[in-house]
Image (cartoon, rainbow, N blue to C red; front, top):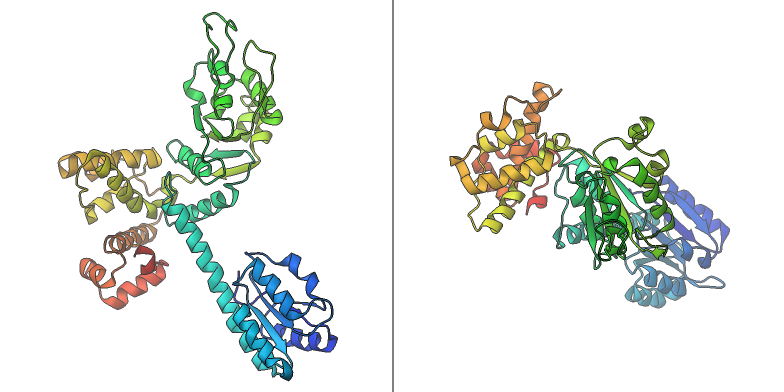
Length: 451
C-alpha cells in the first residue's frame, strides 16, 4: 500500500474521464476509469486501498445511490462526489451520509489533486490503524503469542494471521526448541476451530509398535492386549487441530496410512472395517528438510508433497537476536507469576550475556534460563562464562555488526523498561537526546511501540 494509488474515476462523459485521469496520473496516481457505477462495486472490499471519484448525475445508478452501496461495503472508504452548481445541497447531505467530500463543476485540476491527496492519506491511515488493531487483538488474545519485533518474526506473524482460518494443512520447519508447537497452537487459537481439541503428538517419542494405535485407535481384540476400544488421536482431534511433531520420525510403513488419512480425511480403527470421516486440520512439524529426507529414501515423497501445501519456516533464535531481551523479559514475567516470585532486574551485563550466547536450544533453552534466573537470581549460575560454555553466538558477524546488534538491544530494553519514556531512557543510558534520537532512527525504533 502506497500513498499514491489506486484511484477509481466514474463519469458518464468521456472528456471528463480523460481530463480527470490525466490530472490524477500527473499527480502520481494509478487511475481506472468507468462510465457506470455498477461496474465498480464488485472491485471493492474492506482491504481495497484506494479512493473513488464519482459524478453524481449519471444514468442507471447515480452517484448518491452508489455512495450508499459503498458505505455498506466499507463506511471508511473515501468517495469524492463531483456535482453541478444546482446539486450543492444534495452533496452536503451526501457528506452527512458518508461521502468524503464534493467538488463543484467546473473545477481546477489542482483542486481535484488536492482533495484526492487528502482522501488517500485518510485511507492509508485507516488501513494502517486496522492492521495495528488486528495485530493488537492477536497479541492480547488468551493463549500462545508470537513475541518479537524483528523482521523474521513480523513476517511470521503476518503469514500466520493470513492462513489461521484456512483449512489447508501446514508444515512447520525449524530447529529443536524454535517454537513449532507454539506456532501450531497459535494457528489453532486464531482459527474457527479454537473451541475444539488441539491434539499434539510427538511422533519421535512413540514406540513403533504402538504409534499406529495411538494415531488411529483400535477395537477390542485388534491385537494381543487390546481389551477395550481406544479412540485415536485423529478421531479425538475431529473438529479441531492435530499437531504431528517430529513427523520425520514416523515409520515408513505408517506414512502410507497417514497419506491416505490426509487425502481422504477418514480413518479406520485397527480391527475395524468402518470408515470414520474427519473434519480437522493437520499441522506437521519437522526439524529436518523433508525434501532432502525424501531424496534419501527415509521419508515418502508423496507424503512430503501432501504436507507441503503451506510451508512455514521458523527462524532460530540466533537469527532474531534483537528479540532475545524481549523474550527473556516475557519468560521472567511468566515464571514470576507461576512461582509467585518477584521478577529480578535484568542489568546491562545480563543483556550482554544473553546476546553473546549462541542458544543452541533456541527459545526453549531461553525460557529455561529465564525460569532459573527468577528462582535463583544473581546467586544462581547466571553469568557469562557458565552460560557460554566456551561457545560464541556471533558466528560470521563482524565486530561492527556485533556492536550495532548489542547497541540496538540495549536501547530497546531501556525503552521497554520505561514504557517509551524518552527522558527516563536518556537518564539510564547517559547519552544526549539528539544521540538517542539518531540511534533510534538508525535502528527503526519508535517509542510509541513501547508505551
